Image (cartoon, rainbow, N blue to C red; front, side, top):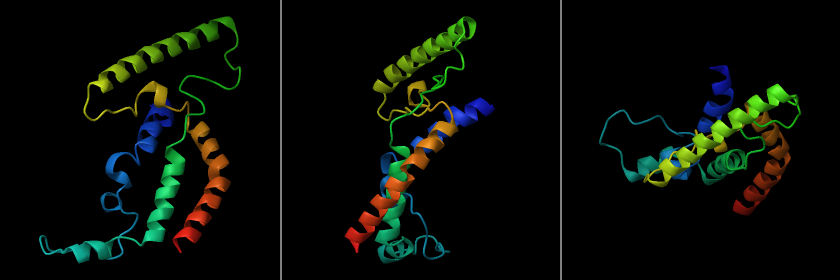
Length: 157
């Protein structure tokens, strides 16, 4: 369960955050500026607009989400930057698991090709080896993201 939570589950939750209609702010507002209505059916378009955050807040959150989740994988599942499984027996086991994951990925890609709304988030080829590699990537992008954020805010204002 721990290995699943630190690899597949994390990737599925993290990378699916900004797909589809989640980038449309009324579907996923970063904040509500007023309490939700207490009576059903009495909400006007102006009321809905008054609940939503301002453009600057929205752009900051969307830029951050896009930067964090729409990046290529650094270390795919069951691949390692370090030679920690270098001896023969361990290396063969890792290669066997990698082959099984490749077969699973192929099956998922084939199945998704027939779906109107594919679900690629638990496909092994889309899963980081661990949350650690994802966190390292996010730390490396932090400075770049701050600079992009400043540029967006200056442009909007």
